[in-house]
Image 1 (cartoon, rainbow, N blue to C red):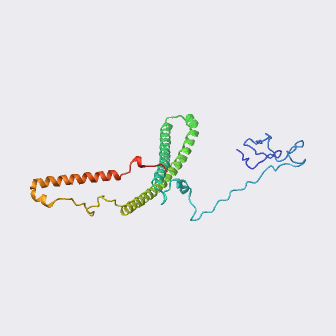
Image 2: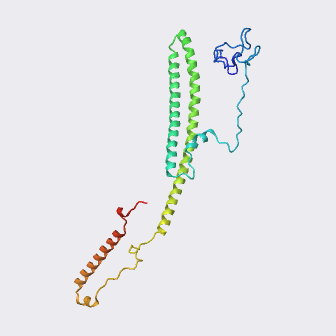
Image 3: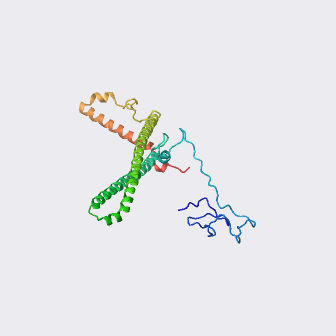
Length: 263
């Protein structure tokens, strides 16, 4: 099949397709116009150049700061030190999606390789029972199958290499995610400790034994006249009253929905 990428129609300057005709006007390509033809938009006697030079793309030079294609492909789910928990979960989902595609492609390529290997094995066994005429008729198919077997083997090897690179990238990102989560947990623990240290203690709140309890008013003379059982009952009653008063005080200090006002 001829390569017509550099050819142009001398009449209109359009590109030439694989059949040697102009994509714009349908004219068959030739280097020069015929005697009775005129180029569109040009003075008489002039024509468009029949061939143009293809300017090759400049290949960028690689250095130690140049990222590889695999790095650019994995940049969507590479975990940074500043990522929060939500971003880590999102990137890990993309990581699992890409890795599943790579592993599935590797498995299918290996199965295709094994299938072609089995087909060649069965054909080699069949070859002994075929007459010479059928062997000649089947020879092109066997040759194509051998060539296909070699190409599929190369594809399977490439997919295995890609899966190995993916495994290394996954291990690296798992370590990065673990480090980021440890950092987030440490920051959360420091935040809670700071909040606990600056917490304001309201009057009457339990201070783990450091608060000053309210004294109970008891008459010493009345205590001398009471028996031991009566003293226990009196102490229980006083403690019960203190607990009720404390609960009522907390309930009255707790804000309710009715206390909220629109700003």
